[in-house]
Image (cartoon, rainbow, N blue to C red; front, side):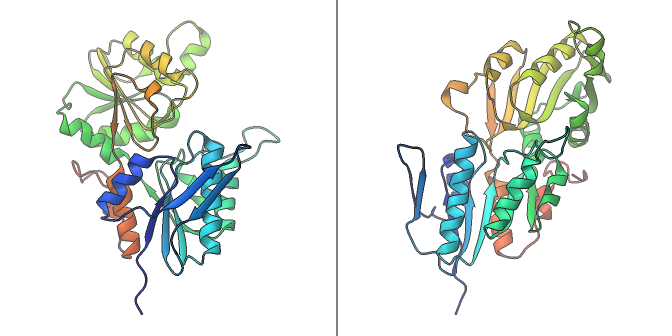
Length: 324
C-alpha cells in the first residue's frame, strides 16, 4: 500500500499566500469549514478525510492574533482526532515571538508557551520564516524549518537594478546589526547602524549613525515593521546624516496602531516587505511593495515531503557565496 499524498489546508489568515503556495505545489487547498458564533467561539470541520495523511496547514499568528492562533489549535485538534498521520504547521508570521525571554520579574515567556501548546497537541513539524530571534527554534523539541526572507528581499534590488557603490544597508538598531551586515554582503554594499544611545542625551536630537552614509542611498533593514516608530526615527537620523534616498525593508509588515501615519511622515522612496502578513486596504501605502515568499514555503513543503535537504532554499540566487 502506498502512503497517501499530503493535504494542504489554509485557515484564512493569509489566503493569497496560501493560494500561491498551492499553485506552486500543483495542489488544491483542501476544504475546512470555519465558522465564528455570535459569542466569538470558533467552529471548524475538515470536509474530507485525512486518515493516514500527512497534513500541512498554513496559518499565521498575525492580527487578529488570538483568533488566528485559536483557529490553528482547533484545526490541529480536529486533524489529530481524524487520524491524520502527521500534522505540520506552516506559520508565515510567528506571533508572540518577541516575548522570548524574561526582561523583568514575573513576566511570561509567551513564545515558549506557544511552542509548548503546539507540541502538546501532536504537531510534528513547524515551518516558519524569519523568527524574531533564531534561538526561538530551541523552544521546540520537534523539527523547525526556519526559512529566510533575505534572498527574496535581496533579489528585489537585483531585479530592479538598485545596486551600486553608493548603496549602504543600515540597521535601525543594534539588534538588527547582524541581519543588515548579511544583506550588505549579498548586495556588495557597505553597512551602518543607527545608534539609539545618542538621543538619550538630547531627546529632541535625531539618533546618531555609525558608518559612512553621507551622500548615499540607504536600505533600512529590520525583521518587523510594527508601530513604524523605529523606521521613522531612523529615517530622520539618516536624512540628518546626509542620506539622499531611503528604502525601508522588512520581512513582516505588522503595521499596528498608527503605523501608517508614521510611515507617511518618514521620507521613504519605497517600503519593501514580504507577504507573510496580509495587509488590509486601509493600510496600503502608495510606496508599499510586497514581494512573495510563496516559493520558499512551497519548496520547503515539497522537499520535506520528499525527504530532501532544504539547505539550497536558504541561499541567495544572486550571490551564492554569502552564507546566510
